[in-house]
Length: 253
Image 1 (cartoon, rainbow, N blue to C red):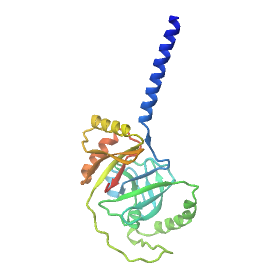
Image 2: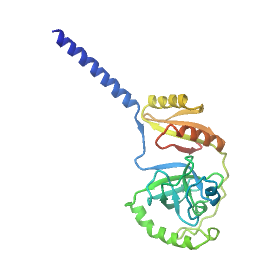
Image 3: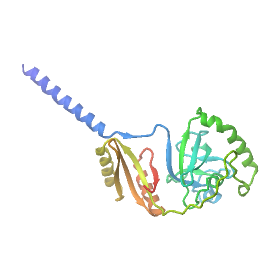
Image 4: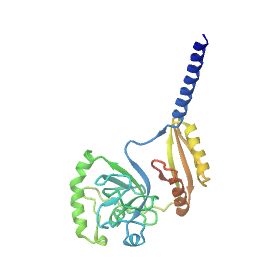
């Protein structure tokens, strides 16, 4: 009789522990994108940066190639300038190049020129494109042809001409104030977002953070906003040591 009671008590505590474990696990679930994408600052290649050992490898500034430390070599990516919606297809030539984690990629001067990026604020959207996608299949031939032309032309001599598109009047875009936030992650539960904030409080010196409710099942943890690129980079590098999966920089949040 006593043995049966002991079994019942043990079973009760075991089920309670399992339920608590499931509850804790549930609260830690965060939302992640299946296809890799990232918004942030690109580093525009320059030979001086290599001499200063800020980039470990050389890249041809006439090419449509980039360095990326998370995407597989020979993959294609779509890079967009969110200010003017100009985009271009580029190829990852290396994922072994070393450069500051603050930058989501190293791009060439040609890519920066084609996208009309501000060299002092080269903010981009970068999306990995599947090799078997129809989008890449249509663009591969054009990409190879542009690559051959670029290899023979000086950087300053490249002229961008969008064939097949209607010519539109160029409108000057008024430069906005520098204002960016660091996106840590999106969570299904508010408790998870609050736990992440507590971790940041305990393990870093960062004291500017918010939880933004996007929907009933989506809570975003943000650091900032920052109106200075040095402060932004300092916080980004500090929080990077916590090994979050895919930290992004968002503009005008």
